[in-house]
Image (cartoon, rainbow, N blue to C red; front, side, top):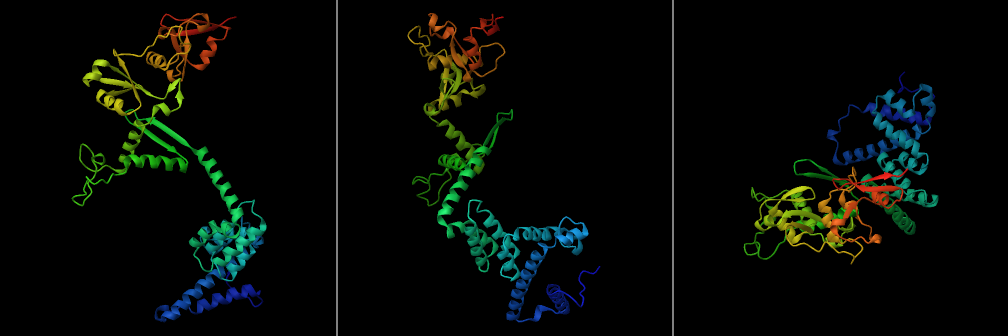
Length: 427
């Protein structure tokens, strides 16, 4: 069937479409090259107006062409039109979606039919009004639609989108403040729910850190890192020569080349961690969060050998540097220690005693329990109530679950030859 052939008894809309088609065919061979500047301007603007009007009529017709889809067994009139006209399915699909949504916005479709806005403009208006939310009254929504439709004649779709984002502020400031506050709270809740942080050791001395953070947290982290990485332009550096020199901390100590921005941020992150005040960090396992470094006294003095920090081996030179500025607690073997035996003078174990227990135990004292020592609780092997003393030799770290077991009279708790603890439920 030739869908583009007319008949003698056509409806006005069909007749107008055919007439336009025939007129354009009649001038198809005319070359616009030799038109004057004014004629070219007039032709261009008129064709854009005609294009918008045609697209408006397309949208308006697709909205009521469900019977055409039924006639041909298509899922929609737009799907049939794309196949029958060999038009792009994406282009016709956008018109079909606008036809469905446009049924709620007759003024938008009228503006399309009149050529006062394009399909892109109409899509912006519909999205902006729908984004107002269900709490906005129909009167305000209608006023917003009218405001944006009127602005479409003076602004591009991109500019109209910016106006649409703030349309509520222009027509109803009080409602805008409430809506904006609710929107920000919803975004914050969503960002918090999406927060993730992953640390994966690559096994070659490098740990890969990746995550998702709320914008506010990321902004604060960026500010902190920039405080450690931003260049200092002081008078002593380049002021006399008129050229600012690159600070040495931005240069690779091996190659002398300037470090990449990513490398600088990595170095800044490490410097920030070294400067954290452990006294203000949350209590973790009975003590402030700290890194305990185990090192021989003679090695620390000589600056040789290897130290252990949180299960990782580090050169002594780095430990000596960290001990000067970071929250690192040196557990020097063979050096002067804190008082670790308190007898009956104190019931609870001190922080120093907990640290010593942590060096002695890497996990819960119960057999087969691998809960890390830093998550455990200090326990008297000899109950304080029965005359036990708060001494290091008679104290152990056990996880909260096993601590409950120890104090549960239904269990018989004993120590194995190797020092591990075990519990048996009495029958």
